[in-house]
Image (cartoon, rainbow, N blue to C red; front, side):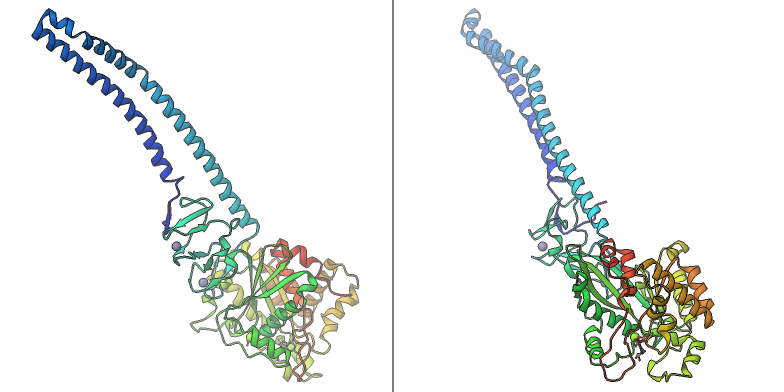
Length: 491
Ligand SMILES: Nc1nc2c(ncn2[C@@H]2O[C@H](COP(=O)(O)OP(=O)(O)OP(=O)(O)O)[C@@H](O)[C@H]2O)c(=O)[nH]1
Ligand SMILES: [Mg+2]
Ligand SMILES: [Zn+2]
Ligand SMILES: [Zn+2]
């Protein structure tokens, strides 16, 4: 079915067929005209002969000799036109039709070729966008005509044109990325309230950051984005923060640089921190790290903006779980004997409850099947490893002690074992088992978003990029190649 667009149908699909009909009609019209003329001439001359003989008798035969010649001429012409002209007309028409059909087939081939090429291109490059306003995901934005502002919601090769289409206002619009569709202004097709950067020519990876109140999500997200902004060039990646007008990156990064802490997140809607992280020469890779108030993962949350309303969870590509070690009661109690924990602001929400709310929402509200869950990558990040003694238990120091080699696979395995051991030691087996039984591809990480408690000095993050790069590498083939070189910790 053709979805109506504010554009003129393509000649190929519309005018072309009308012209083909005209050619056939026109050719046979000429043919019938020639036969009709001969017949009329014959009838007229024959009538004159009959009249002359009737009025002049034998003499009339002599005076009608010219008419006899003309009758013979028209008779011959009639025979010729009746017998040969249709053959000639038919042959010429057949040649014309054959040429037109050939032309159409050629165009059809071009149309299919370009359509398939466009589809393959978009699929291979994972072209998509995530809207930070309405949280939807889509691969085809609505494009706006640069002349009249009319909205084209299916600007692709088709009925209205193969490589270009003519808008109702007369402007020519490109229908593929090969000839500049991305230069047009693009907006989100769901809410129409957000302009998609770069005309939608990018892959998009959305990763909600899940964790209870005070667990460290906002610190982690902001310090990770800051860290990538600083280090991207070193990794041969280009970084560009996308100003959506929704995140608090500018003020948070400024505060963190001066040693101030970000505000507690009040917003219960996913807050998209979007940026491009692209290897040289590759299609732009848009990344969204989604922050939210930790109260969203409270099992008893009955507010109108509760977790069930956050569509972004459905359209995400992977998840990051922030685990505050201080939310583990036994560990908290142990460490509180030697360290003043006031400034670490430990999260009071049990991690098992946070995980349970999250998994239940995915399954019951967003219809994630067991298969979907198994195919979802989850990075489980222990943050605040600047807590004295923690790095020696699960952090870099512990991994280095067991596996000083730089072999990434081995280090990741050791990291998983250390975290599992830690969870077991502090009686969080339920959390671990629930994680393992729900998701297949889980990797544990440890990091410190701030490096130290608030003491007036700028915060210094460590290992914050790694979990994100691991998730992105699993999703994006172009980032996989680039990040493989980076996700190795120094031994
Ligand atoms: N020492 C230390 N403290 C941290 C670290 N990360 C977070 N914190 C502390 O934990 C507090 C809460 O961190 P946030 O990032 O605001 O926590 P959140 O998960 O965003 O919390 P909500 O916004 O309530 O959901 C911070 O104010 C810091 O005091 C860290 O890496 N090291
Ligand atoms: Mg927060
Ligand atoms: Zn227009
Ligand atoms: Zn939208």
